[in-house]
Length: 297
Image 1 (tube, rainbow, N blue to C red):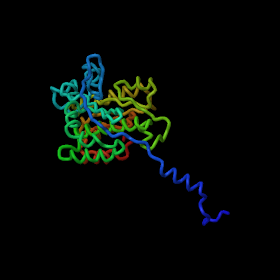
Image 2 (image 1 turned 30 degrees about the vertical axis):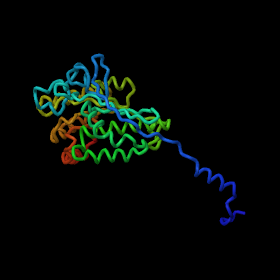
Image 3 (image 1 turned 90 degrees about the vertical axis):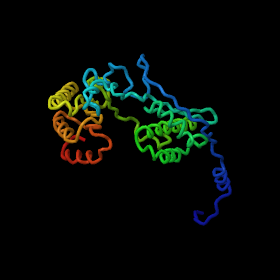
Image 4 (image 1 turned 90 degrees about the horizontal axis):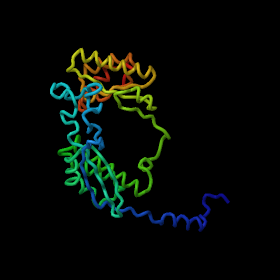
């Protein structure tokens, strides 16, 4: 009769009880964690490290242009980035295996040292654990490495384990990881390309291009002018409306970055990446203040 005090029909009570009592799907626990290391082969088979390439690859900074980097201030290492060991660690592949034989895989650039951390330290927080407890496992790995971690190699190793667990969980539930994280927010995403040839990226349909900064402060005014000329040439190849960014790989100083950003703004620089060392929080704050009113991000 519509009265809010009316008793719940027995069939509804039975269905409700059945729903609450229905067993959840059993999820196997993680049986073992394994870690492997590899380097790029002479056949250009590449692992997780994008810098582990042959000498002539453009990302090595030999051809067609040099690439500024933190070691550019030392003439002996100002050429090929592999000369100072940018690819020294190589790839670390982490594999987690569940009791039912299902495996998940995660990769990082920690190489053999990362493998050691995974198998000798981090594995104790993973083996025997429920793969659904990804947050707890991550927190335990983070806290347990606080005395020697918080950045660099330990976090790379933790990330590889975390990725492997998410991969395993997605396979066990037979759905993509993005669905486990809340699902899609859109059907398509714009993707830009990091490349030494912005026009090629445009031709292949990318939404934008990020090109490397050839010279750092150690190259002086001549290098600065070469940077401006290089970016201007890239802009001319792609036209005025194609998004163009600059990758500086922690190679610049605060004054140099501000000066360069302002010099490139007339040529449509959208944003500038990794211009300062990652720990230079004060520098990034001053950089933002120094570029107030600029269109460069």
